[in-house]
Amino acid sequence: MTTLISTSNLNGLRAAWRKGLGGWIEDALPDVLCVQEVRAPEDALGPIFSAISGIYASKGKKLHIAHQVCKVPGRAGVALFSVFPFESLSFGLPGLDDDVDTGRWIEAGVKLESGMKVRVICAYVHSGESADGEKMAQKYRFLDRATLRIEELLLEGGSELLVCGDLNIAHTPSDIKNARENLKNSGFLPQERSYLDKWLSLGLEDEVRALRGGGQGPYSWWSYRGRAFDRDAGWRLDYELATPGLARKAEKFSIYRAPSYGQRFSDHGPVSVEYEC
Image (cartoon, rainbow, N blue to C red; front, side):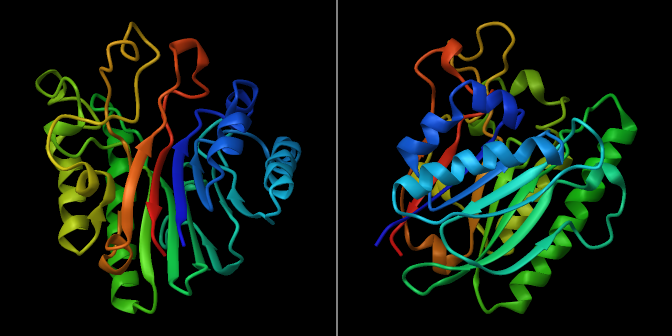
């Protein structure tokens, strides 16, 4: 049996829906879908969530939905869709109470069809801005708390762990088209990248890199500016990081790349991994 798990930054749910998100969902039909930057108020979510549920219902599947809106209007927001019922559910990182940190972290415990228990984390890390000390402090504070939480969950055990989302960090020079030019820019700062080093040292595996191997790319984000998309001048910011039991089941991955610039529903491409479990 195969379980497809996908993650995508939508750059605004309402805009993505207008631009064709529903068509991609209908084609891919992930068993678990984590999305970030929903950036919509509570009253705007219902109709789109209902439409997404309708896509799954037409395929004979019942969809379970968890979400959290950011308390800062127009910012962040995360949602997690699953064909597997939630056995546990929590929102936010312990110790982070500022409005800007809301709508960035969901934990959902699910049992896959194979019986494997997985705690799925849908995460949206602050983007940061290298010239803005306050924004970088927010990002590092969030990453510190995320690291503590991951360590806690790994010690707790009882299920596999899968961290999905837009982490707003390109881990290595292979994950960014123009590494040299971005050494001092947020998203590729050594201090940011060290967090991913730490998470991998704790036992998580970067599934796309593990399945892809060496070489440049692939990327999951391309700026709307210039011809970045056409030239494939991108960054890999979106990840699926799994503990060994689940990582061993990863068979293949894909990153959706729209046929053309004008057909994109976001500046990110959904990252999907198939697990044989």
